[in-house]
Image 1 (cartoon, rainbow, N blue to C red):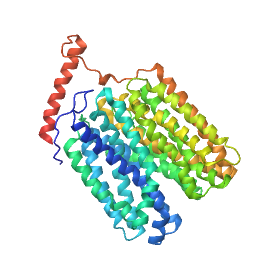
Image 2 (image 1 turned 30 degrees about the horizontal axis):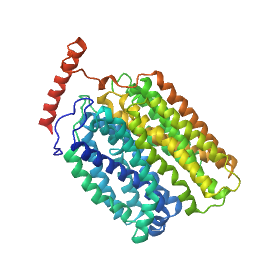
Image 3 (image 1 turned 180 degrees about the vertical axis):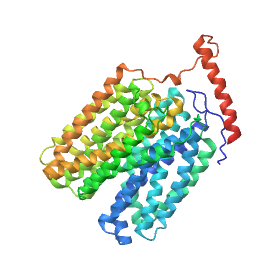
Image 4 (image 1 turned 90 degrees about the horizontal axis):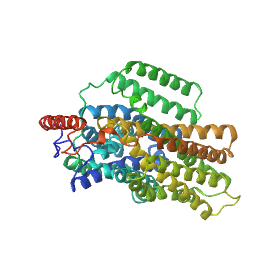
Length: 497
């Protein structure tokens, strides 16, 4: 289906040689940046888009919600399919569809067309984000995997930090349509680089379970929809019915995949202590960050009198500090346990959130900015090591599921965090913003405890260990047999691709 240049699966732990490694890493990070940037710029440009296409504010929300729902629904099915037909095939399919969907959004004559394009963008983003994280494991050698994860975290942070500015710059020069059309040439370059340098990955012989994938998609989308409608003040019946659909589909899914060696909802990986604790840590950290990000604008504007533009600048030090800390933390994670780095980072985040919750009655911009940067540094110190721990705690052949679960944690943490802030605002009004900062600090502290508890757990996956060529122990001989089997698999892959 695709004419990939590289035909062989990299030897476990070795990654790609230079310069293929550089080209592949740039391709993956460029695509991740594009998918994340699209979220940030759409949020910023929403009022302009609504006015231009004649939509109400309530209707325009679907430009954002459609993307989030489609992405949440598709993450784990895309990951499961990638493990069967190859991660890079899903990555390329996702990128091609994202490019075409961006063209559709940029040429959309009405809200309905735009929302349809955003649904396709969300579905294709699931083949870029979770799969991109899994591909990093095959691009970088084991000794540099932390650096690869740090680069991923750096790109995500820069995308969100630059999103509002990029949207404002484009809107100042041309129409909102170019917010999406600009993805087309970038996507074409990404496709060319991916075909040239992305490595092959192990493929499973199991069949794709379409029914389980549908149930999983329904569960995830219904959960996000229930939380979203609850926060937007919809009649209680709407989120209640969505929650019922989520619970029913989850029950059916668990029954369907009971006994499966590789379930789409990767409960088998959650049974691994390192993986389960890392996922829990990720969820709590995303929840803490989302609660802070959602409540902070209300606190700065309603309690301290800052304008909307000033608020945007005051929040920027957070993602900027993440971008600075993430590469450093990634390098450290190749030598320091993820439990220690993550634990320290989330303690710093929790302390920063406490400092924000206890701001003076008339804070200066400097008072706010350095506290924001403090929080961002703590989050950046946590993120890269945690992603590395999630990926290495799973077998190589389950890398897609591990990456998908990592992305789902982010979506769920964001959804639950937004719902929590909405509940606080409903019950407490404007003072709920300050209370939300304390809640975020508590969530970060719980995440730190979960991270530190990993220190007594094996940190490296056995699948990454391989004997030296001269090792003649029985285990090494068995590993050698496995290597010969992988070579046979590579020959089969070359024939099929």
